Amino acid sequence: MMVSNHENKDDWRTWDFSALMAVYSDLENEALNTGTVPGWLEAWSRVAERCDELYNRLYVATTVDTSDQKAQEAFEGFMQHKYPLWQSAEQRLKQKFLKSGLSVKGMEIPMRNMRAEADLFREANLELFALEEKINSAHDQVMGSQTVEWQGQERTARQMEAVLLETAREQRRAGWEKLARRQLRDREIINRQWGEYYPLREKIAANAGLADYRAYTWKQSKRFDYTPEDCKAFHQAIETVVVPAVTRLAERRKKVLGVKRLRYYDLLVDLSAKDPLRPFQNARELTDKVLATFSALDPVLGGYFRLMDREGLLDLDNRVNKAYGAYCADFTYVRRPFIFANAVGIHDDVQSLLHEGGHAFHCFERFRLPYFHQFSETSLPMEFAEVASMSMEFLAAPYLESRYGSFYSSADAARALAENLETALQFWPFMSMVDEFQHWAYENPRQGADPAACDAQWARLEARFRPHIDWSGYEDVMMTGWQRKDHIHQSPFYYIEYGLALLGAAQVWRNSLSDPAGALAGYRAALSLGGTASLPDLFKAAGARLAFNAATLRQAVDLMESRLREIEADY
Image (cartoon, rainbow, N blue to C red):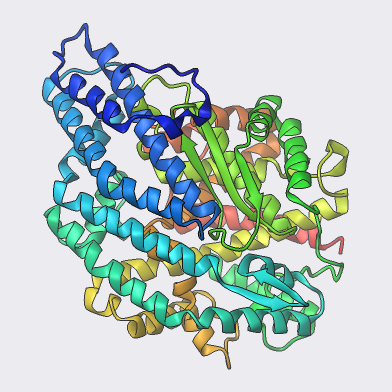
């Protein structure tokens, strides 16, 4: 059953999974030689694309409405009954291809990845992955149902983030406390879910013959170019360079706000004393203005985004029973990305869509590669995938002004950039907390499985990386912060990527300040490489360097602080 790339994007609903498995069987039995391998790889790619898209379409359906029981059942059914068959078929083709000793140009790095995947594969783990996804869905349901009544309306946790931007401190405090109390009501159920994740993941690692789940994840994530020790060195560099910079920002914030103690609800309010930025009223306006921004930056990128809008590949508004957060999913067979977000009318929504837009552009650029194992999401170093998204936040920033059809006056665009830069500086210490927590949890499995020990460890990390925040009287909110970071629960060890990528993106931004066209060209060229180059080479192609040291970090921090001083001098 060979398939055409010109079918309607909705045809996935009628795809015959057994027919797809029959294609895998035919490929397994086909003879391989130098003449047949290109066509064999192409046929493998086409069937792998379909199965990958089927998985992603079903997953997306569970997130756009977490109360949709039929969607949950369809996804869980796929994970339980079809996913194992697909992955077993993939494993047999990987083994066949690797054993043949054959290859084609551009498959060197994908074959390295394939060897790691084939070595890690265990039939016994497929059922465990299905159970893990079931816990993930249950976790999404808990987080998606967290709402409070505020000013006579039911508000989601995401919508309540807008309250933190209000100039009236008492209003910020009241809104934040109300949401915190609601989130604490789910403390025990989240602890129980954590208790379900932990033994499952230990068993996955043990089945693969690895000492612990971190070792498993390292191999699964194809981290060939750095080690856990490099991550810890990066944490230390952040503590040395970034924490003092954030403390300086905090001291200025206390002075401007006229407070002696800086609370969590004081961290996001604009220091200009102006009303919060209100960049859009609804998802339609957000879409139109981000389209204008991308088009001003690069007509090709603008064309990509326009295509997504026209084909219904954007789900941007926040609503009850929608999974938390934002993501970009690959629909690999039809060669389209899908963006999911939770927009509530604040500037962070703009940044989020620019970020996910970067991921989407990465999809369009790499989808031109011929083979699934060169362009699939699993072929990418995630550290560089996040460079694609975070760099776009910086590259698009000069085009957020209304003169380009976008959101802001020049003064408000400067305020937006200041918010982005301060948020970026605050992010590095928080990223270190999340990553350090996960290293601790899986290095110390008995303590890591104990929610009380997790609370205590998170409190220690708060004191180390965010000493500028006064949590007195809110200790229970503070120490349960690990519960509210989905990556810790659903994607263990997937957070260091953001920290490394931010440093790469800061270097792309620095290049753009002196050579905008050159920086954009390098960025797009790097995206087009997909998974065909190593992580250091991808950074290099984008005009950056993969680094973990204080010296490189200091260059980025100095640039950010310098630009912040210039902007804030105009307040």
